[in-house]
Length: 376
Image (cartoon, rainbow, N blue to C red; front, side):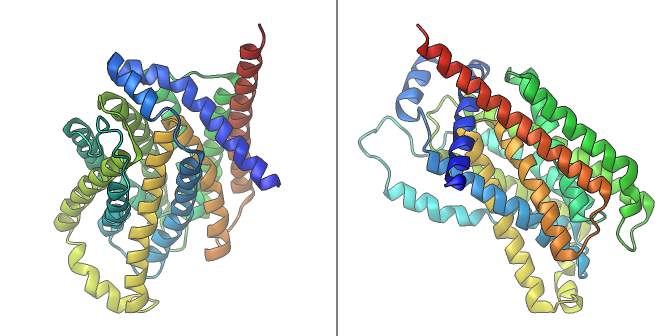
């Protein structure tokens, strides 16, 4: 019963976040009056089940993805571009749900396009190329950092998402959301000051510091991509449906894969696959199993992220991501027996504090709005 109530509150907060953003994002996107009316008719409120499913996919990806990537590096994997490529290369799995949705589409609404427009495909391609670089930075950082440290650093994506949302899509801020951003920054600073003694065996201090700052740069890039995706949805001048979101994600991942493919060919990472497999600590079969699992699990994260943005907003997607990452840290401590220092514990507490502050503020705003609407 408590779990059911918790899920209901999360969905309610998400609806509040969506309501506070939709008007501003429509103005930024330049939607026509006809587009707005058609959008409100066809896709006024995405199903709550879709939001919960998207959050589940994000959770699986953000917990499983870093663990599998670190597993690859720990047991003999060295291809940073290869691991970046695997983060994006699972996009062909999107063909299955797209085919199912195509044959089950609502033919009673002929004015609603099933296929994505060219303009939105262009945005997806540009963002995908940028994502390829962000994926490389993430893999580079994780090759030198423990998963627990990398996960906490990546919560700074919420800071980037918040600032970009405020200046670009006019996302409204409250004392609660400001508090959430501040305490997450404090947690990151705490890790930076005291976390250098936690570098893994074989990693020098200079490598640790490079991984530290490049991980923050990767998180900032992801925050920009989140908001850019939301703006792209608005600028499409097309009624946004979930099949269109999946097609956007397909194109996005394809071009991110192209970006990583170019990097992998230049660095010759792909030529080392057979050699790595033969020398992998866990054996060749498990090596290839790890690679395939990385591709699938990471793609689930990207599918979930796109779905959360579609159902709510980029800021809410950033909050969900920042909330999941500490659990990735706990999973890393259990799986790889990484040290759980006092600094990491305090950083985790600050992150959870920020998450709670954001959701409590959104919940209070929605409650206040309901009371105002009822009061004559």
